[in-house]
Length: 266
Image 1 (tube, helix red, strand yellow):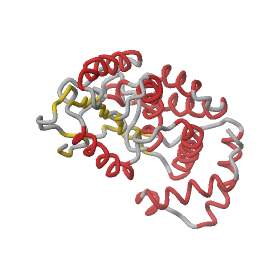
Image 2: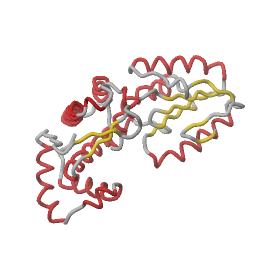
Image 3: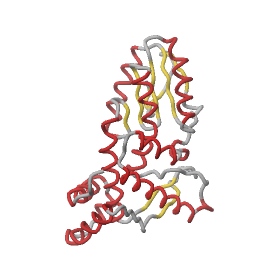
Image 4: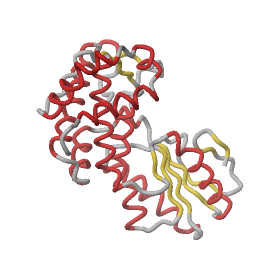
């Protein structure tokens, strides 16, 4: 990872200001940021990543997910890590594999076209993906994609502090909640963890009709006899990452079947 610059900090502030209404409401005068920009830059360049304001709470989606709350300064630190990590992983992204809401409509349109072409498809969903993601496997995947050591250390620091935050509310939550929701960094980390599955289907098997939106998968082929083996391969790939399919949402479907992807009828 290249050194964090003043421009990186300013870019993080600008992106948060555009995308985060709470940040915008709490945003203070420019003079405040002039004082802190250098401090944030220097801290990250020294490999420090102290998120002293971090608090966790129930995401109101049962007890299987947590949301994270941070001060504006700590939000900027996390945003810089997010932008740096996204930049390093981007060369390894595949078309039709995304974690960005902005890409979901285009992805859905492409999948609907494939659905018209192919008689049989696989719809796959991971059971409790954010709850089940294993940190040690995540580090291995980030190393596989040659994420810089200093950036990897920041990711480890973030997850370590997240684990510490979980202990403070241990009596309120299930013990194994691996990643919080509500921040882009978590989606990038889950996306990275699942990228080896994309690589296998697209580079090794060369499946022509393959798509993924976060933890939702679509696979189809003009030769229906291939689909059964693809489904078994997909489940085996998940198992290698210690994930399980969501049995209620995953399966093999014919063109005549009523199915949904991203809550839309196909």
